Amino acid sequence: MRSKYYWICLFSLPLFTALLTTCGNRDTARINLTVKGAPDSTEVVVSRLAMNEMQVLDTVYTSKEKVAYKVTVYPDSPEFVYLTYGQGGNVPLLLQDRDRVSVTADWSDLSKVSVEGSEESVLMLGVDSDIKAFNAAFDSLTNELAAISENGDQAEISRLKRELGTLYVKCKQNAIKYIYTHPKSLSVIPVLYQKTSSGLPVFAQATDAILMERVYDTLRTVYPASPYLVSLADEVSLRRNALEIQNRMASAEEVDFPEIVLSDVNGQQQSLTALKGNVIVLMFWDASNVQQRVYNTDLKMLYEKYHRRGLEIYQVGLNSNKTAWAMQVKEQGLPWISVCDPAAGASVGAMLYNITQLPSMYVISRDGSIQSRDVFDMRMLENEIRRLL
Image (cartoon, rainbow, N blue to C red; front, side, top):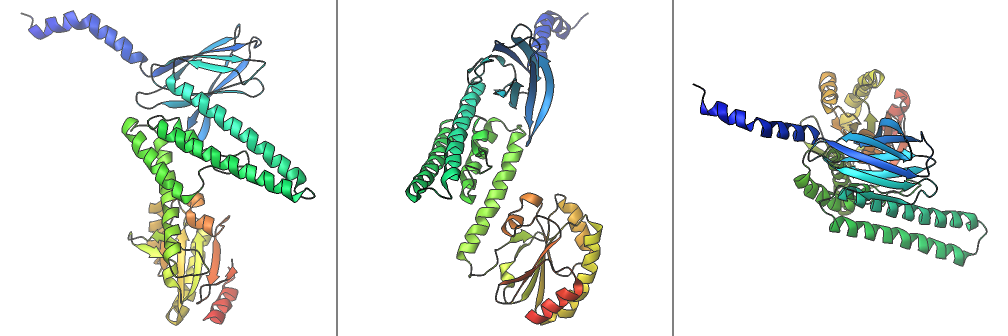
């Protein structure tokens, strides 16, 4: 005798098959692109934004002005996808699973683009258009200013500078307005990262961390699985650290060298400016570099010789692998203050001290003034320390 469960499964089979078919398509977004006037076999490059870099997915070719493409998009994790064609044609899309998007463009006028079937992509198109318009206006004023900056009329130069400043402020105001009116759309992310053609970020201040954190907290409730939020979280952390340092510097005793506050191997926060009154060797290094580890051996001898007389070493490891850095600190038995900034090249400390290569070193006197930089010859370094002690 067959069980009741068997008959339920049997009669549910058509429904189950339908559901299976539907689920099989739910991680796919379909794009139908029409480029009016485009020659046959026009190349269209399909790319996606993978964290912080563009990744080419495929190259497809038009037939009778049309081309179709499918993109894998997982539920609750929209993808930034870009279609590039011709001499500068670029259509930004923000796709969700099950989207069926129709894009219409014009081969002879790249500004004529329309999108249907994806609300997020419509928003992205508007964001992209606004960013391009701002950059065009900003570049025009910048070029005009550069052309007259040497021999031009000072009144005209002042006017152009005011216009540039007004344009920049207006752009940021509009960006903030967009972010607050579209709090649950991932299209706010390119708005947050908007830059001028010369690379100047619109949101460049440390205090912008507050807005970025708010955006992150809101989007996390909607798209908790989105990889784009990982990058945003890193940016929020970086800006928060910069803001904290800025606040510390504003309230701290005046010194000539910028503050750094980072964690040591025990997770304790260590302040650089707390060492003022001593002769300080501030060093940035890479714990994975063998030569720099060997240099620490000689530096230990110098530290043991002069530490009691007032020498302090504050060594910053710029390493993405914090565990490997901690192992090196412990294995070498480094007796001074050792901290790590896993942000590496994006480190606030590295930016404050203009670190462009490793190792880098500053020697700071008891009164807090920077006396010398990159004195790696041990004899010369010892002479400098003795002079300042």
